[in-house]
Length: 351
Image (cartoon, rainbow, N blue to C red):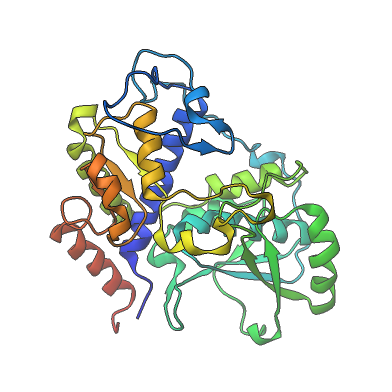
């Protein structure tokens, strides 16, 4: 059984919408909080303070305005010093779902560049043993290799003379720093000659951003200029976005993506720990937050939660147009399902 391509597609869709929503909040395009739903609504406390006190007084509603195009956060590839002598290999896998893939690629690229090692094209693995796909089943290999050309050498597979059994597995915290590589990873690489990188994420919300170092622009390049869906999968994503825009025609085709997974709410990282800082928010709290900042009942909301859970009912009560990855009226049309299944079969004819 292979990795569920529908979850990969939906995850990529979610990442795109996170950027949209994050940009909206960052630019403070928030309407007057007094213009909100009638009815009782309590304040919800967040790390940055009471949400009602943090929004600028605008008159155009809570949606983001047209803004300037984002500029690249990395320098030109020509500005990276060329590596003349590559020694050893770095391998890794993409795991945990597509929302983690860009971070895993970024870590592997930064490590390979620092060690002057050759990076091997990753595979994609699901949660269960045997859930495995090739990189090219979902992503554009040419874009990945060309995006790193002149920065890190990439090969599709290990040469026959190198055995994966000889690789030392190195667990690496996400957003790895040069200091960490020098202290923890480089000695292992110099000793073994080859390593397999396994990124882990220290908490549900990831860590606070560390101090900048020389790898920042490289990490940015790896995250935002290497990974693209293959054309067939990208067409499915475009169709999904079109369906969401159709559902949100009353708001000009704009909609909200919320990274809400009920199973994560029960994990230790969501409990705050000794700091008592709240890291995760349930459907009820999210509904109140969106209501507070001015979103109306007709707002279309897309959730990363795979299947409907009864705890989401409160969100749908306030925002009836709330959908998950497999919502019949939103993302799982028979047409798109058949297209995804056809792509899956093309990658794994025996599955």
